[in-house]
Length: 92
Image (cartoon, rainbow, N blue to C red; front, top):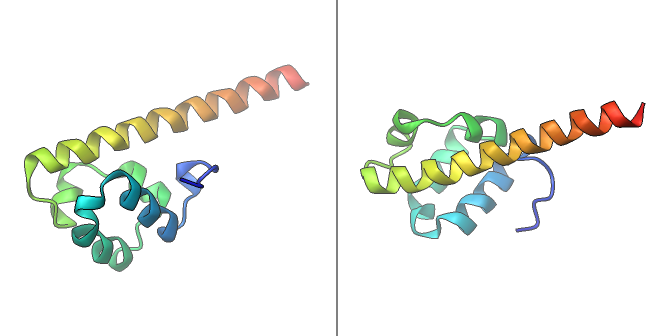
């Protein structure tokens, strides 16, 4: 994926790109919902199980797959933030 910026700053189009790459089997289901609800990267990182249900992902196994990938995104976001904090501390 060509997304080098943080997930929290992704546009709706970049969220669609991530879903296409990570969950191509769910793309048909999620595409319209992501556009309809303007799910940006910041919103994507906040999704919980009940949000996935509202977006049309009703199968529990599918929800868990997506939630696991979202957890990895959140962890990467935290790592990037900590890295920025550390580099700011050492650059002064």
